[in-house]
Length: 274
Image (cartoon, rainbow, N blue to C red; front, side):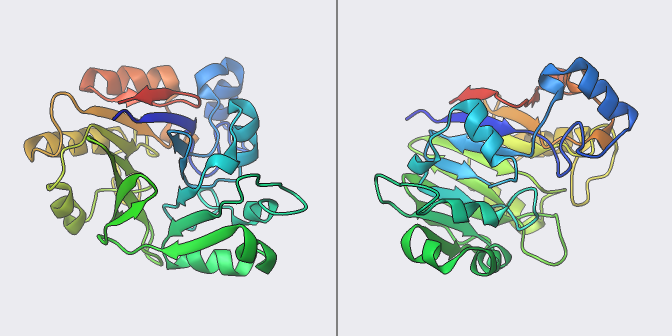
């Protein structure tokens, strides 16, 4: 069974060019345009499973002609505003939206995500249009037609940030950002899977740090460990995403560094079919 992914956004929290920034990397991105223009990160799978709800969601809906009423489930990686903007959910009920199929949208995430929903989403919406479910690291669950295993990420000290193993039919992907070098328990669980696609964090770009986020060095190291441990094979696709202007490399420069190492560089609007 095939899985089709659309990368709606591929930037870190500030976007690229960053919303208020005048640095040289943002100036270059504005000048070059094209794949150097990046919105906040999110992916949609087969038009019915979305990962994260960033503040750029409305832009994504317009740009890619999405029908978000068809999305019944959203996996949220963590509560940071660039990945989860819960106020948008207030638009998923009368008088702002007419959901013709009358199906609820279920948001899955950690306890902080759950609390943000309770504090930010109006009661009328929670009663008629949106549900929230807490996921805990390593507790497997079925989400629509997908089998999901949340793994603990290395990203923030004050919440259990999640990355996801997502399977459908005979295809399995890792949605692996925001995270630095994966915690040991997450590596242990990953060894039970063979990935068709690994999506990795490259916020740091040319910088060597692998704590809380990764960059080129971390992505290459992660790929090598996956190959060594049978988590990946020569047929596994590796894709880097979640780029920041602080990483210092524009799209073509990232390709020059990553593609020789068998890692593709995501861009807004990129599609993959497994």
